[in-house]
Amino acid sequence: MLWETGTPLVHVVVWPPVAATLVFWLLMRQALRRHRVGVRTFGPRWRRTLDGHVAYYLALDGVERRRFEREVAIFLDQAEITGVGTSVSDSVRLLVASSAVMLTFGRPGWGWTDLPEILIYPAPFDERFRRSSRHVAYAGMVVPRNAIALSKSALIWSFRHEEPYHVGLHEFAHVLDMEDGRFDGVPCGLPAAAQRRWQALIEDELVRVRTGRSVLDEYAGSNEAETFAVAVEYFFRAPQRLRRQHPELYEALRDYLNQDPAERD
Ligand SMILES: [Zn+2]
Image 1 (tube, rainbow, N blue to C red):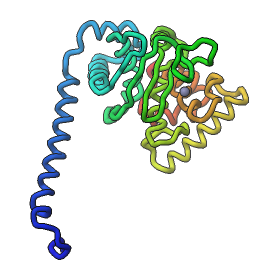
Image 2 (image 1 turned 180 degrees about the horizontal axis):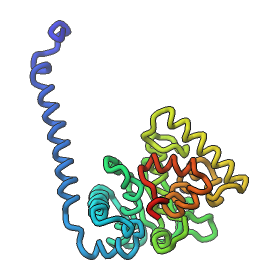
Image 3 (image 1 turned 90 degrees about the horizontal axis):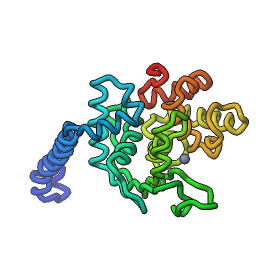
Image 4 (image 1 turned 120 degrees about the horizontal axis):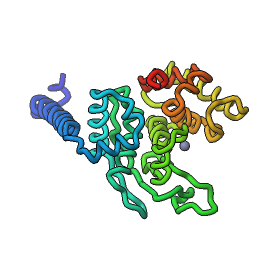
């Protein structure tokens, strides 16, 4: 049939194997690079940072810790992290990576490819990314397909305190939400029926927040996307409370992220 359409022989015989070889080579190169980065020894200083700041990492067993380190190293190899008016130490880079890896740790196949640039601001900033004064202050923000902005002071605070609030988890939850192009509190990668269930769940929770019947803090009442991002913070940081008071929401997050932090607690 291809002969009849006038396709030159070279297109039929030569290009398909060439294209297949090229794709195979690119995939292999990517896999080898991930492997190389992943097995690169995690230096003692990096390990001390995780030991000193990341409670999630401390709760893992030895095998899981090595996997967490590998995934953090892979994230840092891929991510572009830039300080805006502030320096970005290895410790801060590790905290950014740990926030992201906590979300995907239950699903080893998930990665953070095509991430926008991650901008680190010294302190909370306003809606124009200026250092906040009298404006409303943001500790973090995701500009779809453009940038993830994080306040360094808020990020460090999030890892030092045990409160549910966690700017790193919050902003990377937004990234999972908007990967399908919609900022609606329904995370990416779900089949259609599950998406509808999620939507109903998030809408219910939004109503509960707005009527003072939710364990989530009032910022979750801003819209569906914030309900989801704040729910993710509570899932990791106050899992028992979330499970006790909103079992359906807890179970949906547990199944989606394939982790059960309330049991680990
Ligand atoms: Zn948010």
